[in-house]
View: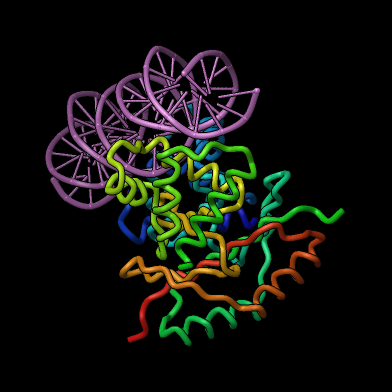
Length: 141
Length: 141
DNA sequence: TGACAGATGCAAATGGTTCGCAATAGCATC
DNA sequence: GATGCTATTGCGAACCATTTGCATCTGTCA
């Protein structure tokens, strides 16, 4: 089974387990999300969904995104361009490097940084619930 | 001279040098910003400005904030609560820890993390222009 | 002091996101 | 497979932070 199908199945099981109806629009949106390897915003997801089923509405896209985000199935990011962007939350945690010229998002991960963050928070008397590390950068010339 | 006055003077010089008029509303807003030690949003700044001079408008607050941000005199942050928040950009660079329960923002800085970030970007073939590190945390119980 | 470009306040526009509501469609039951 | 109840949908209107058009005002410099 492809990663895409696995993701779709995971979404489906997740909603089912929560007693949430698997409606036609939701199926379409789950499919779109499952096959996204980038960090699309709501409009982009809506466009992809409409390409599959023209009757899907933007409201439902937003509602489904919220639903999945609350259940932890996808992650919402607010990069500096204003709108929210989403990605599947399977796979391990990672941070983002945003190419300022192209808008491209590159994922990376550093255990050292993660550890340092935890240390800093601990020193201040806090436990980190989540964190956000974004590097806005330009290709080296 | 107090830090507040110094900051106000810096703002004033900065605008003057750029040939930008030092109008009454701008003076009020500069004063408000110079005396802010927290991370207020536009509404909060507007409220503080109006307390000094009731004729200042929200539009002008936004316009002045944009002006100062473009000149690098203040910094805009987009924490996860939606609206933009601002702070003076004198003093050294720092990152933020946001208390999820109170909304309080604590500043911190780690040279180690800064270095690691630069290394990671370099490995990916990038130069960091700016970055954002936010720890959303809860007080340790 | 006068003139003029830049700055202001106001209200209306924008853009992303959410909400109210009447109509529709899952899904459990018969 | 038909029925009924409720969750879900699409639509448009509402929201909220922020921006903008425009007629009016005001720094600034000659």
